Amino acid sequence: MMRRIAVVPGSFDPVTLGHLDVIDRAAGLFDELHVLVVHNPDKSALLPISQRVSLLEQSIKEAGLPTNIVVASWSMGLLVDYCMDVGASVLVKGIRSQVDVAYETPMAIVNRNLAAVETVFLLPDPANAHVSSSLVRQVAGLGGDVSPYVPHAVAEYLERSRV
Image (cartoon, helix red, strand yellow):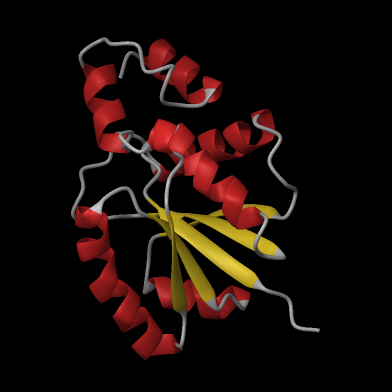
């Protein structure tokens, strides 16, 4: 029997409760789920990739998410190259709004054409639909409390570093 392997890619800069919701639900749909921290050249990162990986691992553990989750990073090459390397045939993307759908659809089509990797869109829990890493970075940067939007490990890290 073939294992169902999927990848949830993102910048996770930082990981939010919305991310964890999507990761948790996706982990229940696949035998193995790779949560992949990727470099987005269109964004200016707040946290280095190694710190994002560490915070993701801590947050997944704290939340008691399933053990079929692998956290990794990828900064060179196409996302579908990583999928091919690990045997994943599905990408999972959280979609908060029509803007996300418009942004993600062309990439999903190209990924299918390049490597026969399908994209599955998961809708957020309504409690987290308004939360984005950009919003968290902005609130944290202005000294606000981000604890309602991020895992405990992330809130602690941001508080300690005063990012």
